Length: 335
Ligand SMILES: [Ca+2]
Image (cartoon, rainbow, N blue to C red; front, side):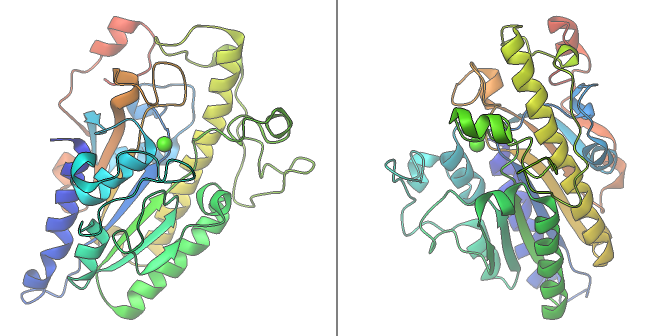
């Protein structure tokens, strides 16, 4: 069973089961799934000591770090379809990418997580990248999927959307499921002029530089290419190091966004009745990783923070602590 299937089952059991539990208790149980795009193992929880991830570190301290998480397919739309249906792509129909000429979509009779939850009285929302179809299969009550960069990288804008969603949930007085799908750390445009302006990972977009705009809540971190950790599956070249440094900035922006969302969750009164999960759709956008069946393409970071399972806080699931680090000597990757 893939890790995303486990997540789906967790959500369904937790949320849909409340119609039974609510007869006994007024306590609500909610879920937030934070989904990164093409993100790797840059958190301290996975032994990266260079990229700053204080908010994912806090989440790790409040939850379980899964050390053997995998996607079903190392490609965006199919991975998301599996996440949201619990069915492998050959059963849900999303064999390839949804957008443009690829034009894949799931079968009309597929039941997705948000629709199942809605039918059980759960308020559902998506903020960020969608990349699945059709809407009738993958529908949410609160649907904020564009403009794409604004809903996936502008952490101030995303924070406002999260606040609105949580306010709506409180007004409805129902449990909720919120799917926050970042565009970070996907690469930006391949056009040389766009890369020069915004950086290869849109790492300059919104940093306050000339023509970049400013994301008010973001404090950009710039990384020295000489100090980044080059994974074992990449050549240690200047070009690779510069790309990794840019990706760290994008990853750190996401981390800062997660900190903002957790503040909003706390302010809404739901920090202690909400399951928070973090994972990604496929490996990092580098050779041997994204779209490949190798470990760097299929392996995903994964954390699950449950306020009801405090004994698991700070622990690592299926740990072989230090083994990977010792084998590669790189200090980056799973434990
Ligand atoms: Ca992706």
